[in-house]
Length: 91
Image (tube, rainbow, N blue to C red; front, side):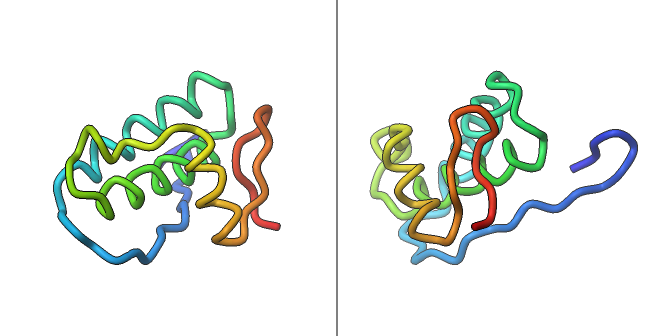
């Protein structure tokens, strides 16, 4: 991702893959959520990666799209703190 003329990376998550469909949709939904909350781009991308990871672990794309509480729990389980003002951050 490019932000302010620099390329930045957001960590991905290793999860058991049930299906490959919907991961990109999940990422975009999560990224846009963070973007609309005015989080830093790297936090929005990390949140998008978490949503995408959750979606590919479920059976159906739309039914696997998580609610905020599930994403926050997933992030905490993977070593991230979460703030509604700034999004996820490494503990």
